[in-house]
Image: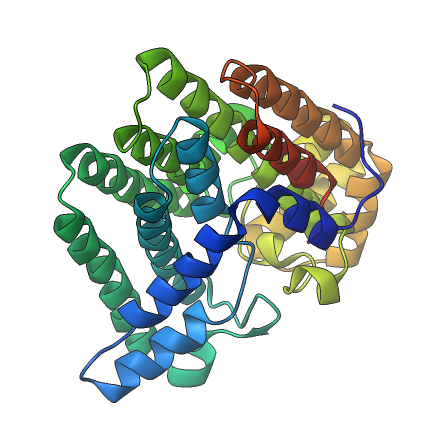
Length: 330
């Protein structure tokens, strides 16, 4: 898959064009679902869900559902469900990671404290499950509840590997399959659940989302060392400060001198050290280029998978999302 000279915003708008009405409905449903008799819950809920973001998960769900012949109203409702659950995971991640910036502004935990942020995160989790129950589709409930369970496993697996310089590529992909790709996969299964989809069509969508999730997360990890903090909305090197051993670090450790390796290992173990030096080593080692090649490989596999669906505007938009995933700057 070749690179495209296109901005992140342009890529997303192009992909979303065929489902603009459904995405507007997603926003309306999310805002309605933040209603609570407890004013602070509603305040924080509206703050965190109103921060914008890419809305990738509802967009993917709707595009796959429409590509498989589903009703647009049902797809929009499910899109709101998966976005609310995803937002809950972000709130909990920010508390665990002591994050202070999300989507270019202060996190809920920074403003209201960890306790209220965790509890409103729980409110979002349970609200998404209330919505699932009201929808009443067992396959939908199974897909999202399984994903929520695996997301928790992924967070624990990542924490268990924190500050460990021996984390390898296999462990890295085991984490991102649970933390990123599994919710994309849930979107595929939920879309199939409301569509006249064959098992082969569902399999194509699941395969697509797994490769998309891998590509997306690899690029996210590249941007931690090569991005612009104003663009990405978080401090560069934030992952290393939290002891996260991501693919750029793994590849750099495989292709650097003993002295350079010592600098990186110290930073991993301490969550500190000479972070500018680590960034320079990662860039000079060729790790970022190798990561980009891996992301492109995943994107090509995703394109091959989704091309098994009937061609049309929705399938074309799903391919555009692959381009966005590997070429984005935030």
